[in-house]
Figure 1 (cartoon, rainbow, N blue to C red):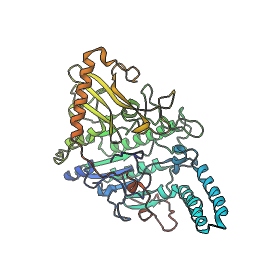
Figure 2: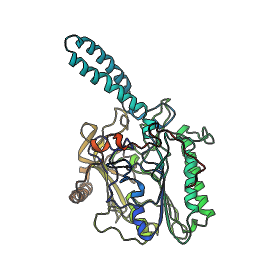
Figure 3: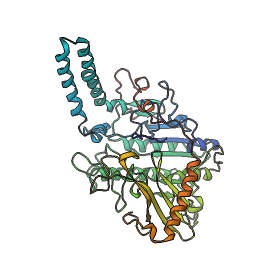
Figure 4: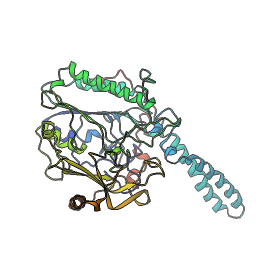
Length: 478
């Protein structure tokens, strides 16, 4: 699921793109060992394909027995601050669409007497269509604010405030139904921390770091509640817990009042959507695995791709033999092995390799190579709102940039490659590996093509047509 154009996410629940059925998720792999599997939180990997309710991309079609959450993501349009992804990305969007009807009406009146057909066409193009588009966008909260339990829409539009408490309740309910006799896998994809920012009154204003900090506080509470439930049920000492993030902070995400709403990456350059920049790909991870030698801090390079083979090994499930698995099991590293499971990790932006991290296992040196970097706004280390992956949005480097990550994690001082044959050899080694890697790639259907990404009214979920408004009965049992 990657894109060759500017659009790299699904913006509508009623789009036809999503995770292909042939893919093997962790949940699908664990079903071979009769695991009870659940997902609570964001899915954002598609819903239906060709007809409403076919659920080809839905979690229940990808190995999960239970789903409670959003089939999309948490966009600004779902919040209560009257902010929108559209206007954040294109600030003058609504002003432009307001001018179009004025222009259309003027032209229609001008041509009406002598060119009546042309006048009607101009009215449709410049008046009717823009008005319909604006009405559609004003209703995005209802169109995309879907809360589902399994395949049923139980709330529309979703109420974000209090959602974390509901997530904790559903997670607790799922855990209470498990037993020592049957293994389980629970994937909790928190709606925090992502704009729109939200939290209950208990956490509002609690942090020194504004709304973003309040959201972190609430998510921290939620993690504690779930870990406490594992304790109370006697599962803690027999459960592998992995807590991490999918990307670094979105540093361009600033609220209407100037508050930082996308996080902070410290000395690390860049952030979310930036291909190989450390601020976008280096994230914290915490693992609890009682009864093992796991202890302290691990400083070796891993990838979120490693989670799949790691869990498969823990569950004694063989990896699929009909496809290339890029991840490596972290079990040896977690048991004390003193080196990364990876020699080289390639970092993609869309379908393009922008960078690579290279670990020399003999001396444990870690290098970062950038062939392509984002074209930042002048005088900054960030893009307008998101960074794109190609064309005039990037800067290509030949020779590539080389950084010593152990001594320069902020990627501030590129090494002069010609100053030492050692550096030229590093570049040569990594570029040869990149070329070999590229030979293993196959073209797959583009899940983010215009057809797959556009809103399709016949796929639109609706809890009570034609109103599409309902509220979750929080007393119902899962």
